[in-house]
Image (tube, rainbow, N blue to C red; front, side, top):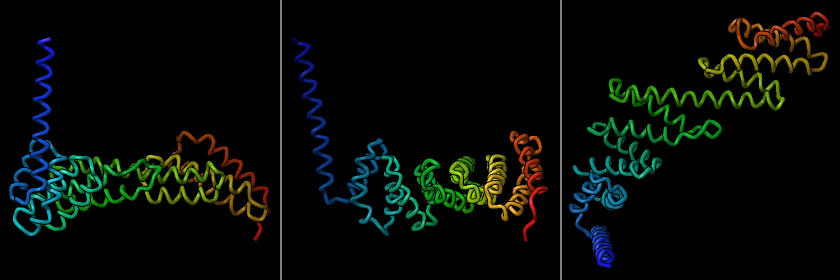
Length: 271
């Protein structure tokens, strides 16, 4: 019974402390003492109370705009948005800071974080890649301005990941035409993919399905178009054997090359 009473007292004390804390914070929000808000905002930030710091910073960023304190405040306002995982807003404010204070001691970090927020907003390859392209552009701009940055290795790793995502999307989109049986479109899209990304990890697949698409397109063509299109297929098939003479699709490619030659030998040349 005595233990239960002690527990009740302890719970009441904790509740009162929490109410007092909330009451004090609400009073601070309503205060017109901006210097106090500035001081308390950074105090909350340093203690990891980012939600409270954000509410205070939101109230006073315009008050200190153009003043000496405004520079630090604007950077930490962006950082606080990042800490509460609002990456879209954080990215916007980091980039705004970088353009507003290009010579600031915080500029390097702001530019990196602005690009990093785009990276975090980059979706899986099947979705629209606007954020991916923006992240790449921002990281490249950052490295060009700060070539000796301590973030260089991180940037290069993130850039590789972002570019790979674009390579995946490009290949998947082109391969989809092949799966759907749109062979002419597949041939064009796959060639565009390798043209856009010559170092694509899917290079062998791209050359194979591009050649096979042309072969199937020729095979399905009307008689008067077959000779020309089998010639195109022959060219694409030979390109695969040139680049991947021991490739995993070489048996199928050689079979198509033989079939193509037989077709060309038997077909009339129509001018």
